[in-house]
Every structure is written in C-alpha cells, then in structure tokens.
Length: 67
Image 1 (cartoon, rainbow, N blue to C red):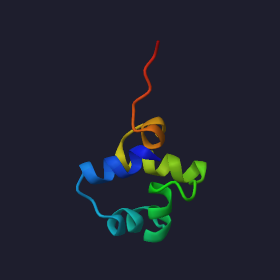
Image 2 (cartoon, rainbow, N blue to C red):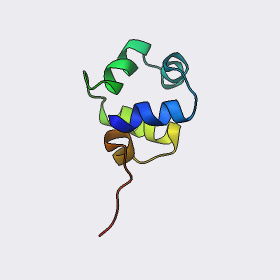
Image 3 (cartoon, rainbow, N blue to C red):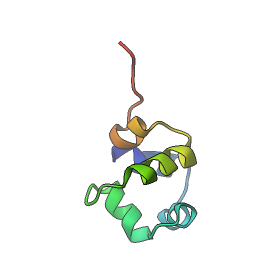
Image 4 (tube, rainbow, N blue to C red):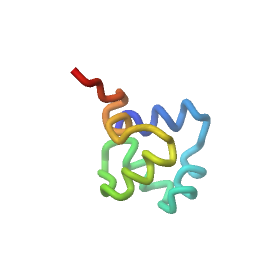
C-alpha cells in the first residue's frame, strides 16, 4: 500500500482524520500503510473514492499505464 501513505501525506491529512472518515480505526489504517495488514476489496474501493485515485495507485504508488 505504497500509495496510501503517499496520497494521505500529499493531502496533508493525518491518520486519525482519514480513519474516522473511512469508519476504521487509526491503528488499522497504520497497519494498511505499513503493509502489516491488507484491506478488504470494499475498503480499497472506499479509499479509492475518498482520495479520488485508482486502486492501483493506492497499492503501488503509481498510476496504471496502458501499453
């Protein structure tokens, strides 16, 4: 989840704010950001909508490029 931490910091949001908005604990968000736990597909979709980025960006930190 390289992009999750990156986009949160770029938007100047703290973990507590994002966790509250996504209805998860701050600890869970920290685990997702640090690769200690993987979010469910439904949570990935919610995060993607929240940050207005692709799921691929949340996972890899890069946007998907068509070849």
